[in-house]
Image (tube, rainbow, N blue to C red; front, side):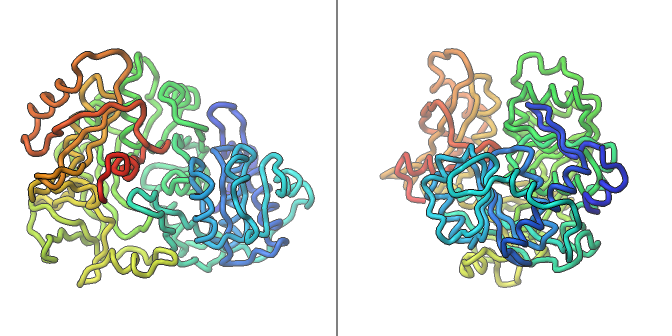
Length: 503
């Protein structure tokens, strides 16, 4: 369950294909280059448990660097490449990175950083004060890395409600590829998805996110080819599926919306797809139904988080029987009300899980403690309910809840409705200050292409025809672009700040 094993079996098999350039990295190259870089990091003083940060766009070197850290027993933090210098500085300081691996495309950010406490600095390309990645690799010949052991990713939350927090999990402290190591166990779970040698996995999202990074590396443990999109584009995505006969992929719901709105999307050949999974946010029922009608019963869904405290999953046929559900919990799940007591099926509250893997929020014991309740159950901060059959339905994030006139309103319901209107390219619903009601419901909408006179009133009527009046926006504002990252994560904090909301 390592790329090394597959490199020994057939070194010329493609491990990585870049979507735009078509550049190929074979398993032999991935194994040799990641081993060389691991030795280089060790020669520069990084030992088991030390920390390396990665600040790059999706490129051929990204997974090489990640595998170098993984096989060296290091913690590695993939930093969002769209952050500003001050935000990157916070992550570097908080994680205590001993090494920063960056690309020359990040030059503007790098120039704004204080790297006095980061002794090892290596750049893909050229940047003042950094060693060059290609020269570092060329300085040493091929050979094994002594004492290979499993490392672990330490990724930061998106910071949608404040400063991002590092999700720190215990190092496996096992030999590289040991079946007992959690990264190996995660990869083994993909075997049930019919993944292995000969599979082609499409990664359409930024590798600094948890699921794209972990899924891509897990696919490498299984010997699959990973097609990495440098950036998501719906037409390019479908072209890559057709060209490379993609068998597996992971998406987020906003990508589904963009695929369905692409003119002529149904003309692309997607018949090679065997297992598609989506996560990160609940998918509007109408959107998922249209995807199933188009791609067939290959679309699966899971609900989880970087923290690994609980997971649900649901297959396509199950979903048709339970539309809107994110599946049955794979570990014990409880719905807890505002009074701290467990709620019966059908009632909405905070979703908690028992069990799960150990983790802590790095340097924040109070935040770590805050996700647990009196039974020791832990939550990702989502609101939902279980039905009588034990299927979980998510309502919204706890932090997104609007309280208007003492009534709890979950904006995801209105967002899902707005996204089905043909004139809406994207939508967010937030609570804004209201002198009488405390908060008022506002929709912030990104128009689809083309003029649409009177759209604001039309959207309000559209919502009122499909939702109870108290759940509907009272006002609509239009923006050129909503603050989403390339993986579809919506930064509602930025919208709240714009409209003077308190939370």
